[in-house]
Length: 80
Image 1 (cartoon, rainbow, N blue to C red):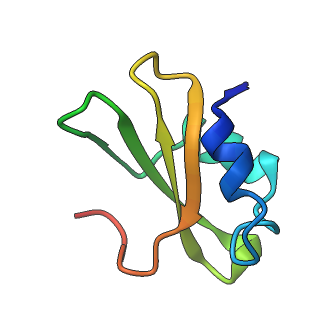
Image 2: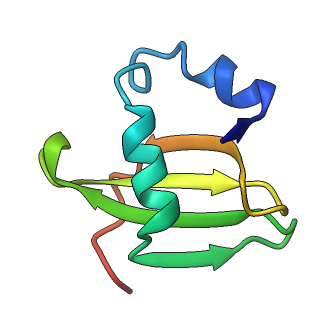
């Protein structure tokens, strides 16, 4: 996987440092939902059972493979 510098910067935050790379891979390969942003970036969500069933949102660049951001989306409630 490829990552942006912004991703590495945000991984230092206390609310994101425990997000496992394997969870990010899981979301990329098994999204429950996907949306394209107006800037071309791609949002993908999936439930992470190991993290108390929280939904992880992964934001990819337009190439569909470079991870720009990853965080638990507390407002996402599943497939919409």
